[in-house]
Length: 518
Image (cartoon, rainbow, N blue to C red; front, side, top):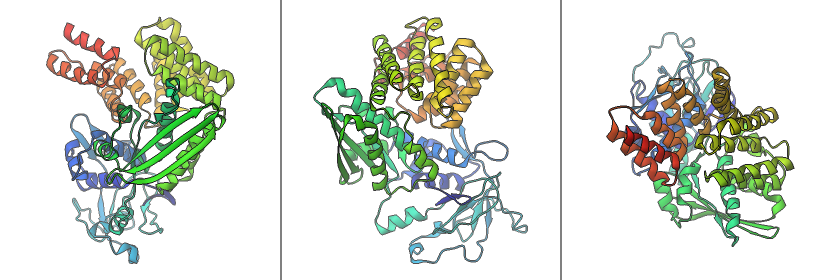
C-alpha cells in the first residue's frame, strides 16, 4: 500500500508492476513493447492498458524537485524513470513477520520512499541494487511518502511514491484475485423505444466517468468500449482484447415513469458471474440510481476510497432528474457530429439550464456544441464562437473547479480572440483539475500546434489518444499535425487507420484529401 504522509494512496496491482519495472531499469528508455511483454507476460492486451497505468503513476508521483516528471515520455521511443534510487538497509522492525507476510517472496523487501540520506550519511549509492532486505529510496521534494506492509507506515522526508506488492501477492497466493481493472460495456436499451437510446448511452458514460475518479481502478475509456455497442461479445473476449479483469454489463428499460436497470459483473478470466443486481426506480430518481450503482459496484470490488475520492464520487452537477436527462440527451446528439444533431444537442442543453440555471456541466456542453459547429465549418465562427465563449464563462463562474469549463473557455479564447496567454492559462488549469481529461489534452495540443510548439503539441495529442484511443477527433487532428513533406506513404497509411475508426467522420477524409493533393 502506498502512503503520502499518513494518507493511504491505493495503487492497482498492475500500476505497481509497471512502476517496479521502470524503477528496476531506471535511466533506460523502455519501449511500449518491452513494458507490455514484461507486465502482461501471458496475455495480449491493447496499448491503452499500459497508457492507463502510466497516467495513474504520473498523477500519483508528480514531479521531481527540478520540475521534471518521474516518468518521462519519449515520443515513439518509450518511457524512462528519472528518479535517483539508493539502497538503504532495513531498520529493526521494518520487515513484517506475521503470517500474512509469510507468503511474500523477495519482492517484500523492495520499497520506494523519499530521500533519507541525511539519516544514513555513510550509506553509498548503489547503481542497480538487487532485491534484498532494505529499501530503495528516491530523493525528491516536499511531500512525505512511505510504504506499509500491514497498516504501519514509515514516514520519510522528500517527494516520491513508494511501491509494495503485498496486497496483490497475498491475494494471489490465497486464491482471491483483486479486481483492479474493468470495462463498462455499453448498456442495452430494452425499452422498446429507439428514442431512449440516449438514456442507456448516457448512463453508461456517467458510470464510466464516476469510476474513472478512483485512482486504484483502471476503467476503459468511452471510445474503447463503444466499439462493442450492438454486439453480443463474450466477457472473456472483451477482457482479453482490452486487458481488464472484469466486465460490467447493463440493461436499461423505461416504461412510463418506471425505470429498471439490471447490472451484471462478470469475471473476465472465467466468464463467471461475480455480482448481479436489479434496480427498480422512478424516473425522477435517475440521478440517485446512478449513484447507487456506482457505490454498490465499488463495494463489491472491495475498493477502499480516500476521503477526497469519496467526495468526487458523491458530487452531482445537478439534483434535477429532468435537467440531467436533457443533458445526456444533448451530449448524445452533439457527439453524432452532424449539423442537425449538434443544433438539437445544444437545444437540449439549453433546456437543461432553463430547469437548473446552476448546471455548470450543461453550460460546458453548450460550449462544446458551438465549438463543434465552428471547427466543422458548418456555421460562421464569428457567429458561434462568441456563444461558445459565453457558455464556457458561465460554467466557470458557477464552478471554478470544473475542468470541462476551463478547457472550453481556453479553447474559445484561443480561437476567437487570439489571446494566447489567457487561453493557455485556462487550458493548463483544466489539466491541473483533471489530468486525465482527454478533451483538455486535445485542446491544449491544438493550441500548442498553432503556436509552433510542435513537439509539445504532439505530446499532448498523444496523451489525449492514450486516454481515448479510438476517438476520431483526437486521432484525425493528431495525424494532421504529423503531416510532413516528403512522407506521403506514411501519411496515407496513418490517416487510413484513422478513417477505419469511423468511416463517417468528415475531418479524417478532409486530411486524406490534403495528403493526396500534396
